[in-house]
Amino acid sequence: MDNTFINYLPLLAIVIPLAASIVLCWGKSLGETAVKAIALVGFILPAVIALVLAFQFGDAPRGDEGYAFLTDTDLGLQSSVGISLLLGLNGISMPLFVLAGVVGLAAGLHAIQSKAERLPLYLQLLLVMQGGLMGVFASVDIFFFYFFHEFALIATFIMIGIWGGQGRRSAAMELTIYLTLGAMLALLGLIYLYISTDSVSFSLIELRKVVASQPISELVQKNIFGLLLFGFGILVSLFPFHSWAPRGYAAMPTGAAMLHSGVLKKFGLYGLVQVAAPLLQAGALGWSELLVWLALGNILIIGFVTIAQRDLKQMIGYSSVMHMGYIFLGIATMTVVGAGGAVLLMVAHGFSVALMFMLATAIFNRTRTYDMTEMGGLGPHAPLLSGFFVAASLASVGLPGFANFWGELTVFVSLWHNYPWAVAPAVLGVVISAIYGMRAIARVFYGPETELFKKTAAAGNIRDITMGERIPASILIIALAVIGLWPQSVSRDINDAVEGIEAFSRPSMMNHAEPLADAEAPAANTEDTAS
Image 1 (cartoon, rainbow, N blue to C red):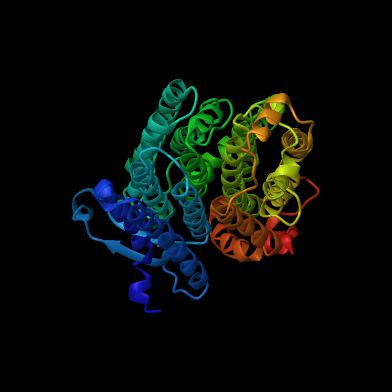
Image 2: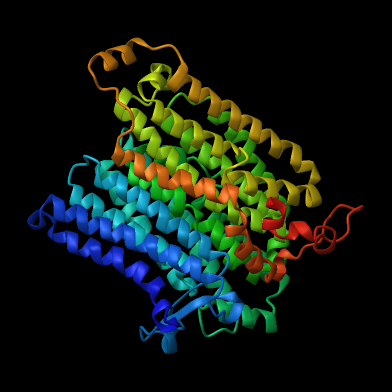
């Protein structure tokens, strides 16, 4: 493929869904079939582009900081304010770019066959989210990295207001307050970072060069990293700033919940790995131990709250918050193994939680309730739906054979060599996940049939998963299985990128262990650990 053309593919992955969204402004005159066809193109092409770039990434020429497919679209802002639409992908952003494309395709396919009111507008806003998500992970300029996130977030707020479920007004208000606060703190941190350097560009590449030649003082680094940690942390539902997430996801329409929980929520985690830690090494080390404690709050406290949930969608929302703790733990270790495992777990969690939210809606459409105590006996009526839900639940728990397993394993390895006291509570979280996951399976599919369920079944509303639901579910479960069986497909590029970041070269804190780079040479690659 021509290198000049392929470098513009990240830009096309952003522009195509946005262009499709604009065309859908004439949805009433286009007709339902044309609306669905245009939306389908807007969701399919970014996924195809992401997969093409992923296959080409290994042989692609690399520029500074390991970026491939670099292209700079001149907007006339570079000379005046240092802002440039500089796009590119490295080993950290590439798998998340693919995640955005694939989850976006699954969410789009589900939305197209849904019976949502005002379907053209619904698809329009999903396409806006999709374009913003592709932009987040393709941006090398931190201004556009932040801009694309806010762009996608606005569409989320609108979708909750129009298509949200019960309690959407209060949930939307809480979500708006928390996410606005988090976004403002993150923006302050990014501005503080920029003015603390002599850089004339918002480009990550240039900022890393400037910081390497003229380091920021340790005190300033700690202040900036603190702003970014809590700003990004609120956006990712870091304990104790998490309450917006379960209620927000319960109120979101399915497509928005899939895209936000599966992809947009990774913005803050990605920002810590790709932006904050490489530029603020001393600051990251200074906050790392506190981050471990907060992450354990996600795992244990939110884990026990998850066990207490009766509402299926709320349970999945709390579960998502809980599993953020493992990713934060990986980042907090400040090692290649931990950071690599965190990125791998971001990808795995994105696929699994999007699948869980989609299946929760499929269950609701058959039982007319999210209350698990009102369900039971769905398994014999919908065996294929049961199989998908069991597989998704086991993937979320971290069963070997699915992608989540390798991410959690590498996080545990990094914890053992840096915070060994945190390993036991972190592993306890796996037990907690198994408890609420297996209990949900038992209650929904294999428990005794309730009176409500019997009435629903008698009315003929119980059927197995349809083809329109089966295809997006299959896309997500296949992605989890491919990475689970072949983790090197993702881990190789992740670790090549993470190894180039000095902040993650932290030696082991265990007295009897040699520095991690020597003592854990095989495990320094997630791919080697996985194999």
